[in-house]
Length: 109
Image (cartoon, rainbow, N blue to C red; front, side, top):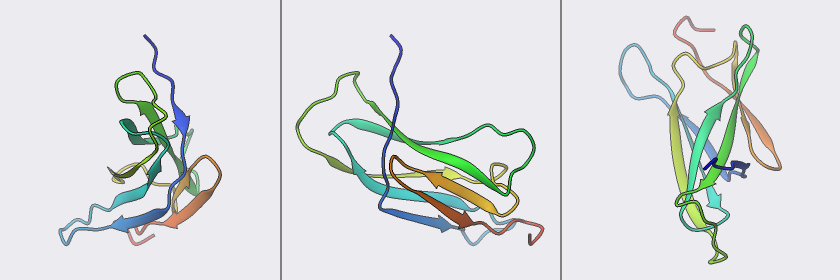
């Protein structure tokens, strides 16, 4: 059975870099899922070459394959940004808005 994905919005976005060397920044995203039990994930878009900002979509699927009308639920997800940033950073893509986030790279770019 094929799962269907849908873009969802986000309320907060942060880049967190643990105090280790080399730095390994992670993108942390939070918001409200459209229904309880939704599995939210961050999905990097495929690009030819390295764009200025690499797109990362905020998507959800029904965790058990069924959606319920029982309200909504908060979510927080993260993704390691090593090797998936653009020249300047990432562009987070939600259902109704996007946000460009500059991410420092190992070479200081």
